[in-house]
Image 1 (cartoon, helix red, strand yellow):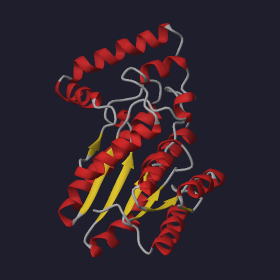
Image 2 (tube, rainbow, N blue to C red; image 1 turned 180 degrees about the vertical axis):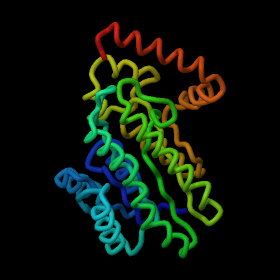
Image 3 (spheres, helix red, strand yellow; image 1 turned 180 degrees about the horizontal axis):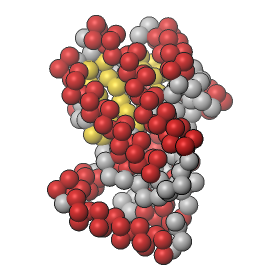
Length: 260
């Protein structure tokens, strides 16, 4: 699929990875709709890149319906949808019901609700592209945050299901799975977790966007801005017990440092 001239929607694009992806695609000639629940952020990015802001909720059923409807009207059709919006809310065993509900809503159901509206139209048109911003946590885990780990695993699983079901009908599905990225979420993680997330270098959002651009060129399912994640993922699959023991040792070190 050519990006030049394509109609693209990027959710959660008022800053961070989403803003960097929107900027990169606009530079490559895409017509970009910038969505974010932060209306001012969405408008600022859209103005800077020559895109079009459609602020609002990209997770609820009504919010997704409004976004897709408005984006289709503005772009005259959506060719690529970046389900990028995400949250990290709730820590440890005591993460509350509202934290679990919000994590599932934003990190999983937002993707489900967007795909419901996009895939039928893409099937009629003969193709489309759905790109999920998950996380290395969706392939491995995130110590300290069960809500983030579980919801990002679910995001990857849903993307896998979409790809397995519709790839032969022209729908390309991809999952972006970075480790540490220098965003507000990274800044809020605190020194101990930042150290873990920076083990293989914390990337800038622009570096992630460049990896995404390369991934769009060859349709790979997993887009891994940190290539080391592939090795960790293979170790987890082939030697699960050893991998879990290693993660538990890391958990113990973080507890000794007072991170958890």
